[in-house]
Image 1 (cartoon, rainbow, N blue to C red):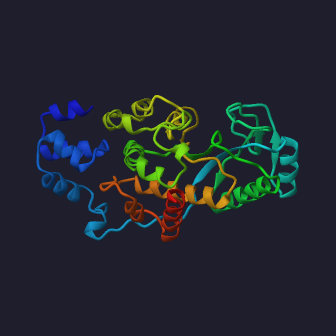
Image 2: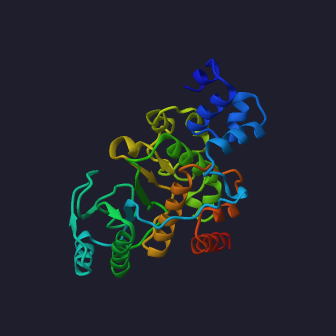
Image 3: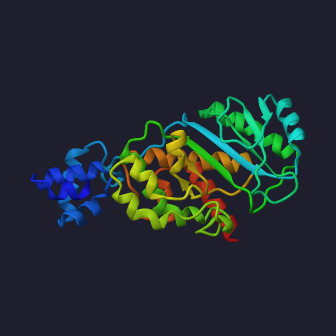
Length: 304
């Protein structure tokens, strides 16, 4: 698709518009077209007058969290029956099941052979939504703590977001923004989840060029070949979700909820924006002050 646009018999302005629609950054479009960044910026400004970034006075404002999502929490040291009883006591609809990938209307407790430690398990949510979903998740975290659930380096916390309405541009922006920020995100997560230190959440940085060149969502989902990546695009094919596998195992609601809000903000930001400066302070541009403060505190805590 990219080569077809570049070879087409049309004006430079039209080519630039088409390349921007494919999700390329203004800088990348300038490189592809062999023109100055200013020329591309002028086309962008006229084409998307409502999408000029904060340097032109249109700051991104995080939206209220009302997204559909799912959570998978890996832990150990609790029998499934004991955990089920505590969850039921707190009003959670939950069942113990064999290992499966079927989304249910209830929480399910299943075995996960990747977890080291006695009585390892994974608890998987039904489809949750917004504030009510977070409140339900908080009860589950409370049950896990009441039962003295443990976590170690073999455990992870996976978040699924509904991606059924994603357009190519938003999806591509999200993956590329995540890849650009991956090393920044690493700083507020434990060393076991950084770079490609963990085979269950490998880096996506090396796949950026293939993502950049994708001209369809299917090509995009194929650009990152491994399901066990920090950002898993393969879940879109099966479930119409995007899965974030980067976060370490935890039963702390504060950690999971702030992670979910951070991801939500990044997804919203990626609807029409690309990260242009990669550093920790960039997180301020698309996060609420309280979320940024939490992430910064985690970074400092892990660096100590």
